[in-house]
Length: 151
Image (cartoon, rainbow, N blue to C red; front, side, top):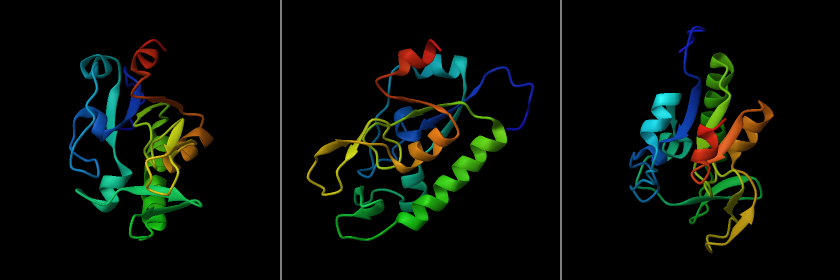
């Protein structure tokens, strides 16, 4: 992926948005416009949660900066290790854009669940998004695909 002559920029995309069944419930959140995204970007599918926990799995949320499930199992170290590998990929390949799943504890860009498993949303960013922002990567969510295509 290190080809500097790349014509299309790289785009990190949450795997669930591409139609991959990687959500906690074994489903996906496939979006429209995937073919337009593929025409304009070289897509790199990612899902730190699936890579660490597989699927189906118990939902996870962030509580006091810790990644936990409903049984209070703590996955913070494992998730952060996976996120570090994604950050390295971004640095090595000069990735500038990401299209990520809103509300996710790793990929949420504007809102995440509050950590109580009560379905309450709060303003905040997922752990991956926080790290991507440090690299000044432009983050888009599934409701901002057309905005992304117009950059």
